[in-house]
Length: 136
Image (tube, rainbow, N blue to C red; front, side):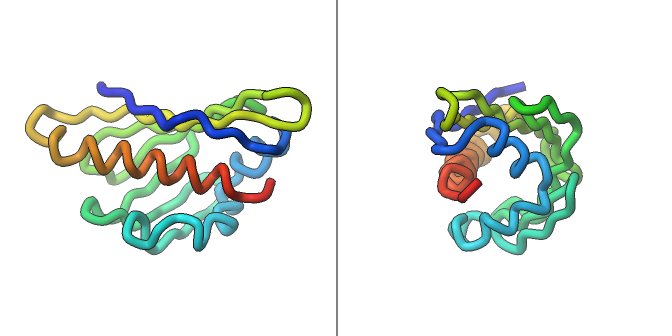
């Protein structure tokens, strides 16, 4: 299984506030308009699940499988052509700020790696950028 990480993003909000917003996927409403349409289309969500249309992969459903308040939200892909685990790590940076990083683990065979690796890395970074821009 290969691991991919976004760069660390500085968030000007306390860890608990960031966690409480991100642990409920209904709050993805605040991301609309912040993720480029060419990367993600048709975002639908509930408390524990989000489905996005990701060109050229198609529909991808992410389900929350574990919450470790206030530092980590673990998810996995359902209906994905490749096994994918994904988590959001949130660490405090003083009392009024925090840092956020996205990590994904994917089981990609050698033949597909060349096609999927770059879009996966780019998508992870775009999502991290969008999470850094919302108000918590």
